[in-house]
Image 1 (cartoon, rainbow, N blue to C red):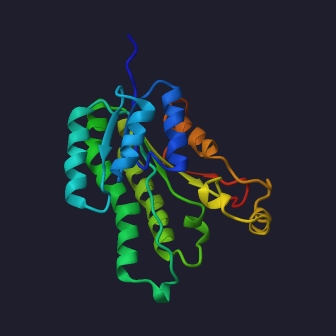
Image 2 (cartoon, rainbow, N blue to C red):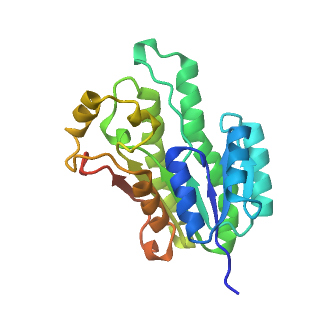
Length: 243
């Protein structure tokens, strides 16, 4: 009997998160899905059914986050893949940005990654196998006016993941990142043609990405085909940034 692979996906109800869920579901993974919204979690349960697992994770609350991570750790000791996809924005120019705007984004987008990996990594080390994939962003390398908090959190992820990759590389655990560019989302759909064309001028492929473009890369990095890849940041951006 084949062993069932398990994947934890944070931010499972968003555009990219939904595509990542679909990709792993199509490949017969047991989904461990999280959201900070009870209503979104219920929608995920309706969509994927009772054969998968669901957890409410409030990423900005360290105490309840660690409590629920311990539940995941104890009930899914054979977890094989972690996908840290959850992220939020709260934009504003630096001179007008409140400390709460800064600290909230760093806490949700960066510190939660530290806590999730720290709590769930011991089981991967015991099992001598694991894949960890974080979703960063193109702006982590380019910067973006009005998003100093978001950019700092996504840049911080790159340093965090590369450091962890070094620490666990000898344990058969791969740690990588995927940095999307402009991906089709409810936000891009609200843009008018002039705004879209202005954005497309900066993309050599002259089109926005699809959430499944990101999901395909995440899935590849979670398979044995990527077993000799670790500590890398993969850009999915249509050529908008070539590094």
